[in-house]
Image 1 (cartoon, rainbow, N blue to C red):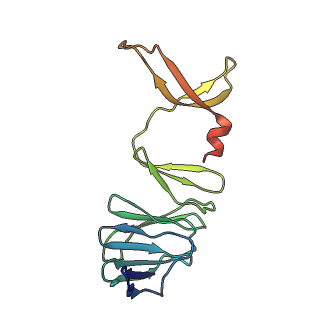
Image 2 (cartoon, helix red, strand yellow):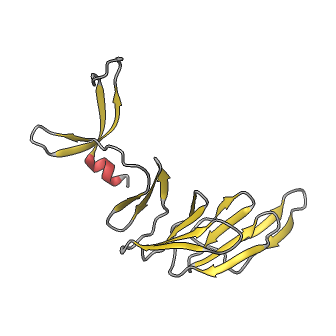
Image 3 (tube, one colour):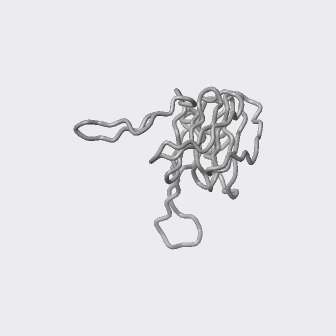
Length: 174
């Protein structure tokens, strides 16, 4: 990890060799940068100065990048263990949770939830329950997921159009 001062004669500001990553991308929060490298070493450093606040072994190997949510860093190992650490200058693992399935992806955060794609499942964590709507045939076969509903009237009952994604497309997008 290097910081370079740009200009006609670029200048090396600092270089951090121990703990650099190959696959996962770092995540920055203010002046702090958090790295989880492929070999399971977590690192927090100050972006302007390169001062390392902590470098600790999280355990496991990582392909997915860490994400920041509500003051915490979430990283998922290739073995499927979620490591939740405090996003701060002091190293503090808050939780560990085993998904019990391989995982090579970066968690996605949307709709107040965290989505983690494991080898065989899409796991949804957090948030409030929200209704899910499926498109079904007359014989009850699920054929799609409703992605939007348009009600062009002010009526309190549904009169409108539903838009659905075929179930095969929804599954392949995950």
